[in-house]
Figure 1: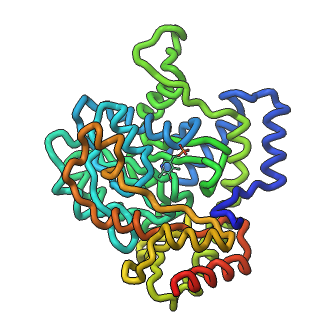
Figure 2: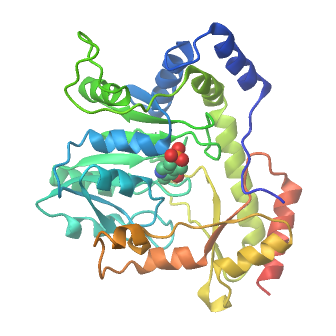
Figure 3: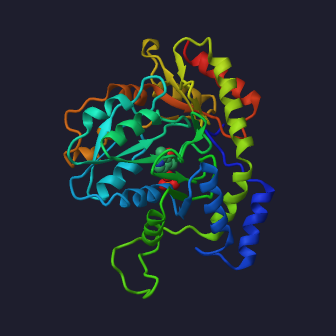
Length: 368
Ligand SMILES: *Cc1c(COP(=O)(O)O)cnc(C)c1O
């Protein structure tokens, strides 16, 4: 089976992990953690990085910095992984959803203003599948309404919006370093913040809110969301390779675009003029007029030993939130169509040009 993605670990990465092990610093202190936090924050153009155990808990910390009161609202896209929505709900907040843009699949910034009410505290942007959301429009509406902006940048390591890196475009951003992300530490995540106050509070929340003066005295309930020095060592070397990683992902996407160009009924994610996508995944949407759904295409590709993954299912479609009475009667037709008609194709860093040809040939035949 040709996998959708595969981690790409080098001998140097392994040597750095071994060095961390030999140093004896195997828990949540050590040189590699400091290095990883500093280098990733600098890469994204942010002053402070707080490494954590995964991208979902990075969102818990980011939302934690908002100090939501019960019933406070956070605007976010419906078309996303569940992590940002559950962070908001667990913090006592209410996610308020907007639909996606039909061509670039990002949250539709034009729908945000109508959703702002007296309880709105923040906009949580989730950049989708390697491409940035239209941050100028989002930042503008946020500024006019005094809202905090959080970027969930788990899918856009190295992507750019008007020449600036994603994860450095808002007040707070979060990353995941899960095995299928562009930089991986196995499991891992990071919160990036702009102010020393946010950095200190996020570090405290990450580590059980121990106090500096009197360790076992607690003002607030925290978490153990720490990353290990071993994980950080695995990530550090990948930051140096980012240019090559991004170039390869873009070359893979260019090959797919070229070979699928004349296939009627197949659309790739449109890269906007203001964006540099890293094509975290290679998503395609099958036109409804073909009579082929995402599930049908996935079945046909599986028969040819090609793995695919379905697109996200909107938050408004999730039974867990419906049972809470959320999103009742709301319609998000673009997200629904993406969920029904979208799959992503193999595009890991290890895929060969011949394998891409075999995938696109099979896609072409599957639609006949
Ligand atoms: C992967 C991902 C997450 C979750 O990260 P984990 O490290 O798996 O917890 C959150 N948000 C987005 C957009 C993601 O793609």
